[in-house]
Every structure is written in structure tokens, then in C-alpha cells.
Amino acid sequence: MNYKIVTDSSSNLFSLEGADFASVPLKINTAAGEYVDDPSLDVEAMVLQIKATKGRSGTACPSIGEWLDAFRGADRVFAITITGALSGSYAACVQAAREYEQEHPGVRVQVIDSLSAGPELALLAERIRDQIQAGQTFEQIVADVERYQRHTHLSFCLESLTNLARNGRCSPAVAAVAGVLGIRLVGMASAEGTLEPRHKSRGERKAREAVYQDMLAHGYDGGKVRIAHCMNIEGAQGMAHLIRTHYPQAQVVVEKCGGLCGYYAEKGGLMIGFEDREA
Ligand code: X90
View 1 (cartoon, helix red, strand yellow):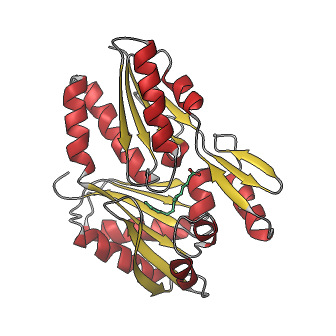
View 2 (cartoon, helix red, strand yellow):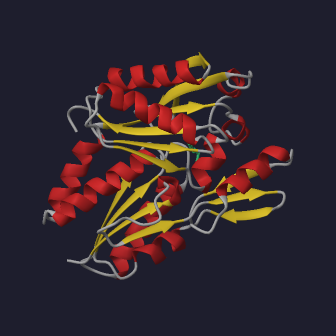
């Protein structure tokens, strides 16, 4: 069997060691032009440019054809998308999967709606990779990742929700909270795949503590953590340090947001994907 793992670029992954992997880019549109969320994108320059200009900006999900191209050559595909509640990426991927299976009898594409964004997709992709390497069958991996997904979560801490609100991905009232200088919105990806605001925190230290308390409330017990940051390496490392203070053995990875997550998480934003104790 020829396995492939494909995610849209909201996963912040552009390669995955030990797997045949492809990233399907989302796009960021601004008055100055279109940015394609691939490894050549200068995310920081884009984020700063958008912050500095008042013009309209938005994003576009991959097309059916782009998903199809990423599947080509594989006969067992796991495709993971950003939350279908906030993006058309999942719907396009489902359509592409149907077409691919029709064009190539015998191939299988399992589409997974992450109900999340960023690091939680990466956790799912790594889990699938590990299962493939362990020699599990396609059906076994499908069942395993369905179960695993119930035990992974996404917490976030944002200094600005301007781009989320402007594009109708969160309510203006929620966005207004984080509009105040020094206030961060701490929340979680809800079970439905939407933004669930949980705390307004003043200052980075209190925000970190609120994230950590939410992690514990969701069953965190020393499992894997991936922290993606947008121009906030200190915040990400501070978060990693707090987790390691309580769980010295925890596997905590810090990474940069790609273009799509950087656009929405904005400067200072943190996204924390983690496993609970039953993962
Ligand atoms: O289709 C498109 O144009 C993409 C739309 C994506 C909208 C949401 C992006 C969220 C990115 C923000 C913090 C975490 C929120 C988690 C919600 C499930 C990251």
C-alpha cells in the first residue's frame, strides 16, 4: 500500500519526517496582492504589512483541484483539514476525495475534519504517520485517529482578533475584548470547531496561566504539546517552560505559524495543541 498524508497549510507543516506528505496551500489576499501559504512565504513580513495597511484582506481555501493534485500517486490517503465550521477547505477536500475514488477504483481517501487549526492538525498527522510505520491497516488507522482526535485539543491566546472578526470567523463582540491594549483573549477550539472564548487575561504571564488551567481542565497530564506562535518566540517558550515545570518529561515542540495561522492569530498569537490523558 502506498500511503500519503495530506493537510491544508493551516497545519503549519510543510514536511513530515518518515511519511509521504503534502501541504495544500490556503491563500491570503490583500490590497497589495495574493500570498500563497507555502514554505517560500515570508510570514512575518506579510503579517506586518497587513497590520500596517488599512485595506481589506481575507483568505481563500484550497480548491477541489488543488486537493486532487495532492492526492495523485497514492492509493491510501489521509487528508486533514482546518475546521469545516470556519472554512470551505473541508467541503472541497470531501469533493476531491469522492472524485479521486471514482477516477481510481480501489483507492481510498479518508478525510478528517480537524474541527481545529494549526498544531492540532500536526498532532493528528504525526499520529497517522506513527500508525502507518507500525504497520496498521487503513481501517485500523481510521478507527485509531477517530478515537485519538477526541483526546487532542487546541487552546489559543490572542492579542488581536481583528482579522478573524473582519472575515466573519468570530463575533465583533469577542474581537473587541482583545482590542484593549494588554488584554489577551484565551480560548479553545470548541467541540463544533468554532472559537470558544474563555478568559480575558491582562498580561502575558496571566494569559499563560489561564491557558495552562484550561489544559488541565481538558485532561492534560504530561502528553504531547505543540505550540505555534506568530512573532512571539518568548511567549511560546514561556508557555513551554510552564508546562515543563509541572511535567518535566512532556514532549513540547515550539514552531512558527505559517501564513494562514499567522494571518488569523496575528502578531503575538499562540496556538497550543495538546493531548489529554486518554490520548
Ligand atoms: O477558508 C478560509 O479562507 C480559511 C478560514 C480560516 C478561519 C479560522 C482560522 C483560525 C486560525 C486562530 C486561533 C485559533 C482558533 C481555533 C478555532 C477552531 C487560528
